[in-house]
Length: 235
Ligand SMILES: *Cc1c(COP(=O)(O)O)cnc(C)c1O
Image (cartoon, rainbow, N blue to C red):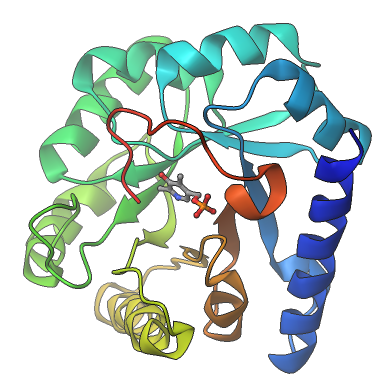
């Protein structure tokens, strides 16, 4: 089945076109291929086609795949992070995309100190204040920033969000712009660098790139329709 490779190529060329429209270098965007619910054989096709970065949202499901696939791959955890899974996640994943509270960040910091590692994380922002979604509100984030910045282990890459899905992607654009603007403000207020923005999924990654996304999390546009929902799925 060459379908995965074809769809991957299509997504890549859409990413390239979006970076041109945004006058950004092609290598400023990381494609995180979201392989949740898909088996090792399908992921292998993407690996064959040159894909190296994959996103998963359940630790147990991912563990099997990580063990079965080449160790040269880079795994990003995009799902909701359970405290009791943090130790395993830090051993298996390069980047955690959804750190959604100060308490969780503190827990990760403690486990990281214990393991002697320096986790790369995104802070998840609940841009539209949706009850169904996790994440810091802007006020919560501002209150937490001093503590977050004091952490010796956490490497905060930037902000992540999952805006409300809309049929018309232009309706989603303002949420992406808002995340970028929040990042810009925080960089000024706290004199820090938050260089990366994890935003954009299959339906809207091109608009996200136009608004500054550096990490797009794309699943179904590459692998096809998921036949079941993953428990704890955020999107
Ligand atoms: C499933 C998921 C994605 C990918 O969604 P698609 O619409 O299939 O591209 C991206 N981000 C998160 C957080 C997800 O849970």
